[in-house]
Structure formats: structure tokens, C-alpha cells
Amino acid sequence: MTTKDIGQYLITSDKGALATRNAQFSQDKFRELLVHAIVRHELPFSFVEYEGIKNVLTYLEPQIKHITRNTAKSDVKNLHAKEVNRLGSELRGCPSRICLTSDAWTSIVTDGYLSLTAHFIDSNWLLQKKILNFSYMPPPHNGVALAEKIYSLASSWGIERKLFAITLDNASANDSCVAILKNQLKLKNSLICDGILFHVRCCAHILNLIVQDGLKEIDKSVELIRECVKYVKGSQTRKLRFTECVTQTSLDSKKALVQDVPTRWNSTYRMLSSALYYRLAFCHLQLSDSNFRSCPSLEEWGRVEKICSFLQVFYEATNAFSGSKYPTSNLYFPQVFKIQLKLSEECNSSDDFMKRIASQMFVKFNKYWSEFNLLLAIAVVFDPQYKFQFIEFRYNKLYGPGSNELVKVRNALFDVYNEYVKISNTPGASSSCSRGSNEVYSPHGAKEQEDNQSFDILEEFDQFDTFEFACSAQKSQLELYLDEPRAKRSSHIIVLDYWKAQQFRFPDLSKLARDILCVPVSTVASESAFSLGGRILDQFRSSLSPQIVEALVCTKDWLFGDKSEVAMNVLAVIKAVRLQLEVAWRMHKFGIIMNAAVVNDEG
Image (tube, rainbow, N blue to C red; front, side):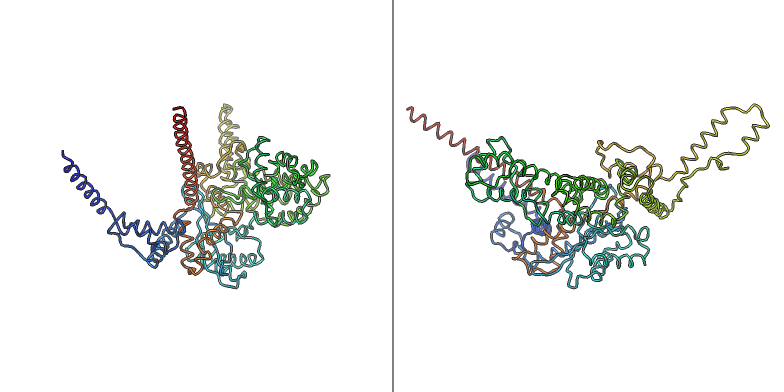
């Protein structure tokens, strides 16, 4: 084959490949992928009109038809409408009831928005979180207006009769909002147990109020740590000097120092925790840098350690309550129990400062403890590692054995279970069993024994067996579950997987477990929508209409969820690997050059 023949063959092959590619191209698919990219990566609508992007797309497909920003905006609206219908069908058909979280936000142009998020457990026993609405909320933002807005949004999804609970922060307007919502839902007979479990206060918000109340008077040692961190971060020279101290003390330099925001106690905890890790490095810096004079003394380091240990309990509880990928309602009681023990311990401390702040926090803790929703006590029963024994264990320590408070929780548990049994049209069985019941013992047995002296002793065994079976058969699913031994806490059971496996043994009880375990104990899920809304409605795109903002926020959550974060993490890893490869190549190239230089020198 000649060179001319080879060239002709390559040209023919290239045309064939181009024809195949053109045959596979779809303008509709292109627009779909383009609008997905805009939503997923929070791109401006003008992205589709960038000359550079249009050139790239034309190079890939010469026959492509470019779209304008208005067309892209229209496509986003159509995509949102399509996903609304799909999600609506999913919500109305899901086997569980639906829990809501809601919060309000003000944009950069002072427009008010209300975020409404749904939480439910699907047919595969997976916890789902969907931002239903990111809706424009004009003033006033009082309880009446909030209730009307939330009820209107829930009704537009057709889920107003499927609601189980709503989690809100402690704003005063939310109390009147919930009262109005409950009255509206009661008219439709939509609430379980007449709505006594409906309102859940944001536990993360409550913990924040408790800690901030105690830390109004900050300790001198915390101020010293703050000054230490400020000093190190004050210049590049100090950072390098501190890094040398870290290396000399064999500490991990990757654990960065954290500068706190004084008004946010969790950042103060992270600052103290990071400073304690680099304690030796700070002491080494004090010896090597005469200008560094704020290093705490041995006694002050001890004080910092106490404060950090004290705040750690609240920090871990806040993190546990803020999850949205796993159930949090069953975590409330164990976490609050740890907090109460820590407060009690510090209230009896010999350290006057710790005793003072713990006493202040205990007052507010008891205030909120007395107002907590019984649902949060019931929820821990559905964790097979705790069951009702944990409530009994804790209440016995608080109020003594057989307290009225313990009876109240037990009664509420059985009341809500019995209502679920009634709803499912399965008659509840009596939990009591009388040994003298005619249904269990036939009077004919005694008569036959008198008439027939050859009474077989095995008949007594048969009657005993029948009696035991009858007692078991008359127990409810809840009682059978509670009678079974608890799982060991070290077993690390995934609670939703447990109930997925038990749903056929306890059909009614598993329905209750499904609804209770999807109750969020914080509003973090709704608040997370605000960071997304802030990125979309920034200073460069502040003129976007509320309808477009809602379409962008909600559609991204429905279609991609956490995939965007995963993608960002993957890109970060790729960039890091690429950087390492480039460095390695340069070092390799530099080595070749050096070797050549050595050879030349030797020559």
C-alpha cells in the first residue's frame, strides 16, 4: 500500500467516524446535559453564550444549535416542573409518614425565603432528605404567616395528611405557627395522638443556647490560647517558625491550628482542641522566639484541658444531632444523658470557674429538659441497643424507681402504638393473661380427673403448654419486642437495617419505628439550603427571580444531592495526584539534566 493509499484510507476513516458521531448526536440530549451542568455546578445562565464554550461545542459537533440564556432558563423551569411531578408521586406513595424541617433566610438583597425540607424512610428503609421548597417569603414573618405558608406548601405536594412531626428552632413565632398548623391538621384528623408528638424543637439550637449562656464569662486561659493562635497566624515567618517547632516535637503538621470566632462556641472548642494537640510546639516556640510571650503556664494549660473536655460533650452531641444521612431521634436520649452527667459532675467541681459556668448551664438545661417532646423519649425504645430499659435506667436515677414521669413515657409509647394498630385495622391483643381464664383452662379437665382416675399426667403438660402459648399469643408486637434481650451496644447495629429485617415479624410496630426514626432533631438540613441559596443568589446574580432561585436550589438537591460534594472531593484528589506527578516528572527531568551535566564535567 502506497503513502497515497494510506492517506486516502485515513481520510475515509475519519469521515466515517464523523458521520457515526453525527448520527449519534441528539440536540435534545445536548440541551438536557447542558441544563444539568448549569444546575449541578451552579453556573450562570450566560455560560451557554460564552464564546469559548460555544467554540468548544462547535468543534465537537459542527451541526450543534447553540441556545441563549433565556432558553437555558426556560429549560431549568421545565426540568424543575418535571422533577416536581416525580418527587410528588414518590412522596405520596412512600410507606412512611413525612417529617418536616423549616427555617427562614434573608438574601443579599434582603428578600425573605423559607426553606421546607421533607424527611422520610423509603420502601428500602433508606432515610431520604429532600428540599421541597425554597420559597419567597414576603413580610410579615410572624406565626400566622409562617403557618399559612407551610400548610400551603405541604398541601401543594399533597402530603398534608401524611405529616408526622415538624422540627423548628426556638424562635417565638414558631410556637404560634405550630399551634395554628396543629389546629388545621386536626380538622382533617391527620395527626397521630392528637398532635402531642407533632412539634420538635431543634436540639442543636437548644444546645447552642445552653453553652452560650454558660460561656458569657470566658476564662483567662482561653484568651491566652486565642492570642497564641493569633500570634502564630500573624505572619508567614511566624508560621514557618511554628512549623519548625512542630517538626522538632514530632507532631503532625497537617493538623492545622484553628482560629475561633468568639461568638461561636463550637469554633472555640476546635481552637482549644487544636492548641492542646500542639501544646509542646507552643512551649518550644516560647523558648526559641523571645517575642512570643502569651504561652499559657502549666496551670493554665490544665485549665484549658478541663474547658475543652467540658465542651467536647456538647460538641459531639451537636454533631450527632446535625446528621441528615442517618436517624437522629434515637440518639437524643443517650447524648442528653451524657450532657446531664457532665453538668452534674462540674457543678460539684472544686474549680470555681467550671462550677460557675456549669451551674448557669444546668439552669437552662433543666428548663428545656422539662419542655422536651415525649417523642424523643419514645424514639430511643426503637434502638435495639437501648429499648425501654435505657429510659427506665435514666428516670430511676433522676426521679427514683416507679416515678410518674416514667409511667407517662410508657403510657405515651403504648398509646401511639395502639393508634398505629387501630389505623392498620389489626385488633390489638391484650397484654394481660389470667391463669383462671376459661379460654385457657377448660373446666372439663378437672371433671374428667374426678370421673376418671386414669388421668394421664401428660394432659397436665398439654394444658400447661397451651397456657404458655396463649399468654404469648395475647402479647402485642410492642410487648414481644420489649421482652426480647437488648443487643449489645458494642454490636454497632444499624438501626434501619434492624427494622428492615424485623418488618415481617412486627408489621405494625415497624410502621411506627419507620415514622419515629425519620424525625430529625435539628433544622440543620433546612439551614444547609441557605448556603446553596447564597451561592446561587450572590452579588453577581442578585436579580434572579424567586421562581428561578427555587428551581435551581431544589432541582440540584433532587437530582444530585451529595454527588456534587463527592465530585468536588474527587477533583481535589485528581488535582493533588496531578501535582505530585508533575513534581515527580520535573524532579526526574532535573535528574536527567544533572546527570548529563556530570557526564559533561567528567568528559
